[in-house]
Structures are given as structure tokens and as C-alpha cells.
Length: 308
Image (tube, rainbow, N blue to C red; front, side, top):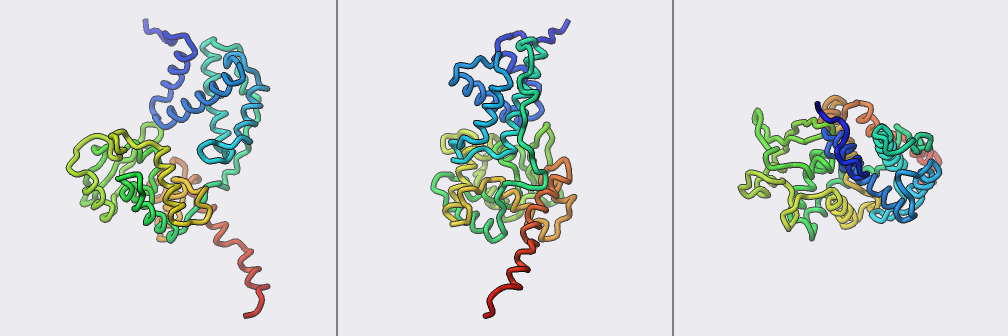
């Protein structure tokens, strides 16, 4: 008879089993592991037993997430990030409850931030700004793969997790196109065409390699998301872009969506290229830019402007 319960009944064992339930998405699994690790550390710093915390403790943790500056960015987490972390903890405690490790799920009635689905806090970029960032990135003093990495982020609009997970074996050819297979959440993948200029950088970068991680650090390790974050921030600052301290890799993804739309790409084409399961996610990118481009304040300002 197959044993259904985890053999390791320690907290670490239950947590490992819970994370394994997300085996189809390495991205989700890694994010949830970070979320739980951060919460366990927060509890340890306050001498709290994670198996005995109550709603009041989770409320305090949620408040801390919303108010305490993040060491990486210097700002508190965005509402979407706070909501995701609380969702991860809710799932974790639900698993522990089912396993009999806790008597109740303390997250059930914790109020999560309200998320405006039509608004995004991501700073967008114009085509000119994206070009400026890419040029600055080419001179990055840290990464040898800087030009190619910037190309994948700007020209393909790929997610950071997709770029970091790329292997040389994900590259290919199809019907005259140079292609790359991007692995998405849920174990799915999509094939994208690699523009000719980017393909040239790709060949130069490979240097004959036939396997292994496509993007590697100087010591041979696979590129990680935090290195990409710092790379984009350095490039934004070097390019002198407005709000450079708030520009992230996701800003380049938004820029890709905006430029593709302006150049005539259909909603269906952009949805597939971005790997969105729901077209409404793609349309959210559209609304964020359109609401600024068509803001009536420009009309009013022109009407009341001083002559000359």
C-alpha cells in the first residue's frame, strides 16, 4: 500500500512535502519557499513558535511587510507582493492543518491588501528609454553576458525566471527562424522567434557550447534573478532614466508589450509571446500606458497655456 503521509513529520519535512505539491512550477515553488523562510525567520526573531501563532501575529507580520523597507529595494513591499506572501502562508498553514501539525489556520481571517487589477506599480518605459537602457547595459562592468541578457529582456519581453532557467538545449531552428523555448509557470513552455541581431549575439556568446545554462556567472553558476535585478537597476541608473531607482526587469516586459502594441501586434500575438494564460492580463499592460498617453490633463494644459 502506498504511504500517502510524509515520512518526515518535522516542520521541515511537512514544508518540503508542501513545496513538492507545486512541482509543476519551479518559479512558484522557489517563491513560496522564500516566503515561508522569511516568515519563519520573522517568528524566530520574536521568539514565536510558527506552529502556535495566532491571527494577531499574522496581522502584525502583514503590517511589517507593508511598512518596513525591503533591504533589496529600500521601499516597503508593494500590495501585490504582500498579498502573494500572505497567500503562500495561507497555503502552507492549510497543508499543516491537513497534516495535523497545527490545530487551525491562523491566516484565514487576515485581511490582505486590495489589489487594483487595472493598475500596476511597475514603471513603464518608452521605446527610446528602452533603447537607452539597452545601450547602457551593453557597457555593464559586471556581467560578460550583458548585451545578450539585455536583448532577451528588451526584444523578447521574457520573464526573469524564464531567462534564468534557459539552457543551451532550449535553442533551436524552425521554418527558417532561430528559436528559443521559454519555460513558464505550471510546467508549460512556449517557443519564441529570436530576432537576427539577437541571434548573432547568441552565437558569439555560446562559443560552441552545446549544453548547460545559457546565462552563467563568471564562476560558472547559473544566472539568478537577483543578479538580473541588480543588472537592470545599474543600467537604468547609467542611462540616466527618470525613476531609475524604481525600474525593474518587469519594466522591460511592460515596455515590450507597449512597443509591440504600438507597432501593430494583435492582442492574441502579444498574449502568446508574453505567456499570459488570460488575455485580461495582457490588456492590463495596455490600460496602464493608454491611461497616461490619453490623460485629459494634456488637453487642459494646452488650452490654458501662456501664449508664446
